[in-house]
Image (cartoon, rainbow, N blue to C red; front, side):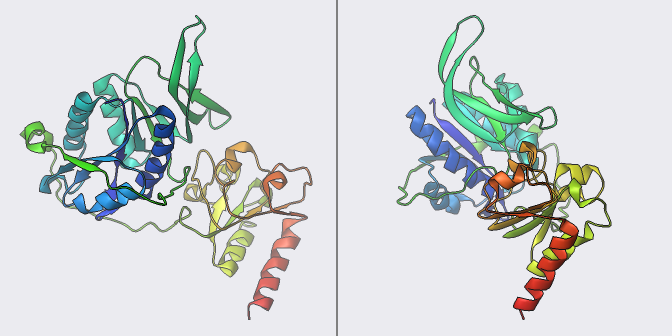
Length: 338
């Protein structure tokens, strides 16, 4: 009771990165609170994933297995979690802000009357005092962008448990323990929980289309901003990316202007990335964008404004016209890579 629990997603028998990112964060929060880090694993034949969960900090695993749970369906998964949370009473419950997490977490919070903060970009532990002078200690600070990313909101839930949040993929580091310890496994008796009504929705077939754009997993990203000027000129970004074997990213302003697709948007309202190399072209560097890429191993900024905020976080800043700089970079790379 009163521990932190992470709902762990799987895909084709493997743990999703977001689950390991959340476990990494959860163990840091648990250390501050002096409680356990727990994991909830639902599926079919997923018990073999326990060692990987231990490696990322899970001290106890709640395992709900059944052939009927092989693929995600809202009703049976929700029933299992609601019943389990009523029994174990966690103080914090974390879900990924994925398609599954965004479907599942609101149902859980509604059933438990606990409240939910969606799409968090940071989680911290701290104290809170309201306008009436009431004080609370060791609350979960649920931090997320609001009003289109123009402000950062810190949300607390002093009165209801569990404190629930969904967290965006990629915003937290995935770090295994140096010396993991083997924890315990408690099996959830799904037959006592699930009824025929939970399986009212049948899966007829599953059609999966491979993701064509994978910014999150790219090692090198070349991102263009509104300063690129036009959709036609954005071809320079694609040319540089092709030359470097990189993926193309964009700022929100560039996407809103129609220069490229929304799937390439990096920032608070897009994807959070951590590549080995991030090349920023024509991006001013507002907080809404940099929050999604400032953890890159190396950042190169290209902007003709010497006072652009992006230069402050860049390892190397190039002050110049992108229409001159980018073609020279392409030519130089081709020359020296032969």
